[in-house]
Length: 125
Image: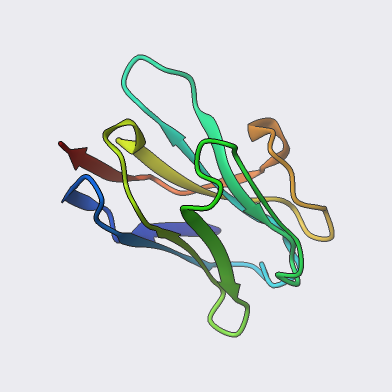
């Protein structure tokens, strides 16, 4: 059984930081590109950041570039999203996603086969 479990969400004030974690189990994700997406109420799910299987390549949405950092630890089969200088517009449910093995990082939700249950991030003014 494949599982992606996110953690680290919460309620913070504007300007604060949070680090999200996504722990993978059930199959080998060490060779899979992974990503973070988010979905705010009434809006479509949007790309936040992605990372190649090696961690050598990372991609970010313009809205988070310079504030968020995606990283991974393949030994722990965990992906992280460090979020700094949080803004109220970052409020959303954040989802971790993984592609099938040997695929490159992508910004398209449809390219990802595995998804976590999501973790809520709320940023107050």
